[in-house]
Image (cartoon, rainbow over all chains, first blue to last red; front, side, top):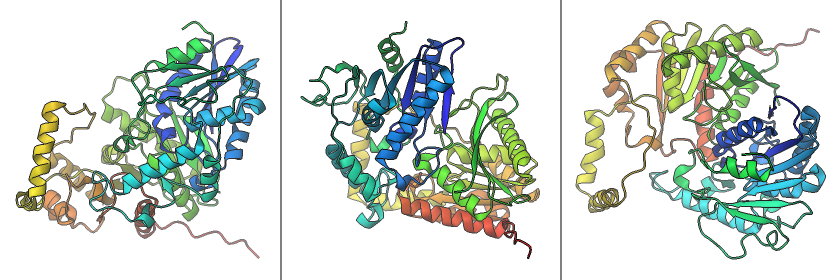
Length: 241
Length: 277
């Protein structure tokens, strides 16, 4: 399932908006729509889509597969080229969507990458998600009584997680690609070396404030807002903001 | 996997939704799922996707869609109140599902704000034959207050929590939220009675996540009276222990099971067609 945002005339640049996964996909839906609309208004055509097994696309949430997601990005980039006739496609993604855009960059032929708080170390991300899930099942604002480990097991913040997907995410280690890359950093706590090894390989890092609360258990149903994102992304796409 | 198809539809071509079509279900009741809060049609934790696909597998055609200005839907450019827009949007959804499936009767499903939307549409939409309200309207009663406050009066931990909360509020004022304002209880009671008088079948499912609003099955009768609460076309269940949006998979399974049982009892799906010969 995808939504294409065309421009009035010819678009030389297109942007593929790769969504994050899990509840972040739902929380950023409105923002991705605003971003696509804003880009189209600036002459950059955009395509939003859901990977198979996520959002409106076919498949169960528990059947996510990393290689399928990468293949979906490649196919979506091809679809964007066909629909728009654009010669240059920029890949954009938030969180795991940024990781997948990075992994798919060579196959999708991205001319540029814009990664918003991408996950670069899958093992750390898995540990973080496990910790959030453990906190969730004991959270008195969600449950009158703590839920058992069995009831809460095999899930990350509302979504079933197969052992296969868990292992694939844990095995992810970002490696630099030969594509100009911008990292939009809106994480709350500064951390030295967070964007390694991309930063060392020449990726530009831009801080965006206020920070984004990706894992706040009490905002799982809240839309993520990022008022400065559109300006940053349009600027990075080389278009007049 | 049952076939699903995306549509742009509505009186201004401004609505976006996904129709799920079971094979050979023409004539069955169609199920329309409304937005939860401000989330798009996929629902929290993909709840609407899983629910509609399960219902498709049981033989029910479904539509999950975004109301005006929500999700992928645009504005209709009409000068109308939100309630009027919701009713018109549901009318458009009914027309789409009727055209795609041949259904003539529909059941609305909504969680939280979606339940309020379903209530508004069920009041006036003649094609609606039933509604499933997940954490729908409920009002605190004297019984609620006794059950809620009495145990707290005797608990030192509760007093500690109360003062800690007050202190936090004094230091940092609470975040601004965009909650909805309930209509007066008498209005809702009257509207429910009118729905039942029109022959609608209603199912209220309350989660354990609204303990500040609902704390015992008895509260439903305390709130709406026997005329509504004991009506044979109305059923109410409390899924104690769950949270408001059914975050855990096992809680969603439990809720889906209740919804499916009620639908099969009240609106049995058509028997599968058997090939001749």
